[in-house]
Image 1 (cartoon, rainbow, N blue to C red):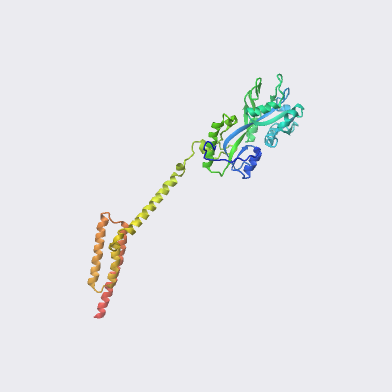
Image 2: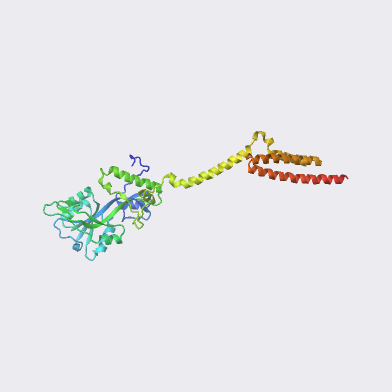
Length: 379
């Protein structure tokens, strides 16, 4: 991913087993994990991709007469990885009522398996593994090679019913000749169970990050599948609503081709933000223009000239002086009205002039009343 310039980086923490990886994820230790669908608390998990499938193989040694689940009655089955496979074994036991058939399951280490089979301490071996040449070769090596006798595989015919009741599992038809080609083992397609391994992300992880991760995983798969054939199993997770582990919305968006770019995601917000900023900028510009308009000759501005008339009106001592003030007001308004009609004056400024004029007219009326009272007192 780093070599390909992927936009995300991962720090890998080796937990040894899928069970321990699932527990670390459930405990909040990691944001991502490769987990087996039937292990751990995955309530906070959302799938990114399917990493691989592990297929259940119930193998019997060469010459064994066991060819069905019923034939296991009273037998001992070795289980490699019994701890992680406990839920799977429990599902099989329940489906076939193997407790009543007195079938016992024994934990066995891979290194001890061949000897236990040869000593007949085990009559069958249950393994859950990816179908790749590496793991198939390991299983072949457990059994002695014989030209006349060959190991066998027991079908799990109730795989569909088990998968229906335990959502972590899927029914699977193992292709003819998977374990060995000549003679073919199995000699026809064989029904069994498989369990997926998922790359999961915490459901709180951002959609953009997970979408980028899903894309990176698919790109890396394409680049490395020749060197690591197991990576061919990497596939999109199910987007079905009833999927055992729901797909992460970011991964779903990527696989559906609905991943949004930054502009797609925030286009509406940017549009409205630009409108608001444009309005604010226009308002500030108008205010600045109003405040700074003719700033070099502020004394000649209409509002300033009207304000100066306040002093003249208050100081007027005769009707002639008040009449002169009214004439000046009329001249100012006449000039501004002409400018407004030509579009050279703004409505807000003209409205302000109207308010100022009303104020001056009240002052003139008050001053005129005052002058009339003085005249009567003099008489």
